[in-house]
Amino acid sequence: MNDLKNEFGRGILAAWLTAKGDPRGAFLVTNSFDACKRSFAAAIIAFPGFLALTSFELANLPGADTWRYILVQMIAYGMGWAAFPIAALGVARQIGRVESWARYITVYNWASVIILGLTIPATLVLSSSAASQGVAGMVQFMLLVAILGYEWRLARLVLQATPLQAALLVAVDTLLSFAINGMAHHIAAVTPSLP
Image (cartoon, rainbow, N blue to C red):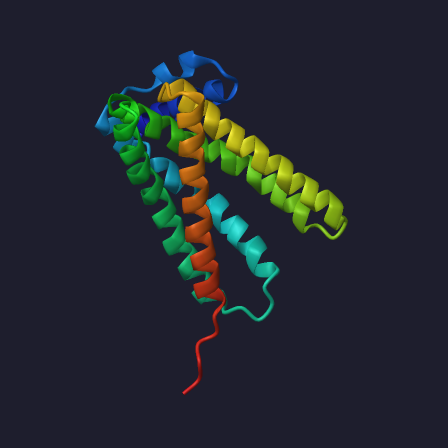
């Protein structure tokens, strides 16, 4: 248990320093496949936050089948955690950075916890009745820019990718997220036909 706590602490600190642009953050985690595998514990740590976001979405979908929606979103959550590391491995091979892939995914996974920490308060603001459409749109845009910028910096500092290569990784991650979330939302929102 202490090992996981230490790994969590190092991983979050590595992700935080990377967000601030400090390249030393990347070296707080080891560049090993074992550390990379253990970093997927971040998915478990982030799971309550994911459930909170799912409940906010459900509140805006009157008439949705609650359990179906939650089940489909949980499957999409797992797919999201698996899809990007596999795609990033392919990109890392193409750009000649495969030796840094394990460290990159380790920091990326822990960074996902920080990103979720930003997303939940923003979602609370957006879901409040006091938020106008203009404010909601501005908050969503600012959050998206912050997340994309963070992921770009992470690729630059940890994977040592060029600006264009980092942008490619961010684009791959964004497209995968939109595809998985869009498919999940469509499947969850479709009402099964009655016999």
